Amino acid sequence: MTFVQLIDCRTSRFDEMNRLMDTWVEQTKGKRTATHAMVGKDRSDASHFVEIVEFPSYEEAMRNSGLPETEKIFDDMVALCDGMPTFTDLEVVRDEQLNRATAREWFERAGTIGIDHTFDRMTDDYVDHDPSSPQDKGLRAAREEFAGWRRAFDFSFRVDDQIAEGDRVCTRWTWTARHKGDFLGMPATGQDVGMTGTTWQRFRDGMICEGWWQYDRVGLMRQLGVLGE
Image (cartoon, rainbow, N blue to C red; front, side, top):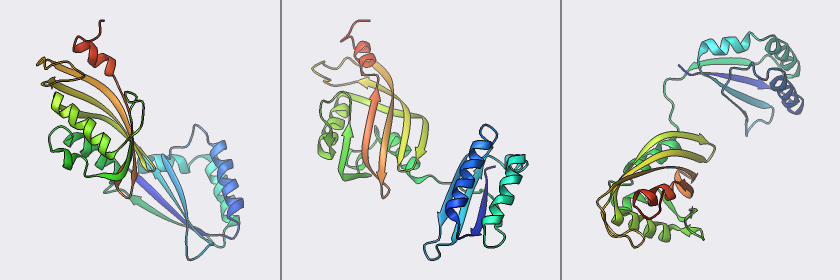
């Protein structure tokens, strides 16, 4: 179970503490068991800081605490604080990464619901980057291209993997389809086809505002007989 530790402290020497943390990271390279660390400053009190450190489990956190470098750095940190830091240990019982969930929902719904509902999580100034297109597309053009894919294929996406970082989500997907209508001048073949791809989506206020696509278009054309092996 994911484990999170909150370290609450007050200091007027944060720049020194920040350099101390950099030193610790360097000294423990390859040894640390933490997966995510974040430091926040209280907007109403410039001397009040909270560090949030995430570990895969409580046991991994204890391994991290047991490193000799950790003990040394803790003593140095206390010397920079205005009083003893406090620690809160938390077992994570619910973890929602909302942008990642929205991205997954977008792909899972893409082939099964109407165009309006497919694009209802995109901003009006959405920008689409697609290697098959010489120019970036806005929301209207992206909707029209997507509608063309829907006319040409009955399809669905399977989400294979996702990574979320800041305001971006990367989704690795598998697309399976049946060719039912005209596609780039090729009439329907009734053939079952598929391809894999990766899409980066950028979010703003919970909405998708930009997308970058990479997919095996050449492989798809070969399956349809447009290109030779």
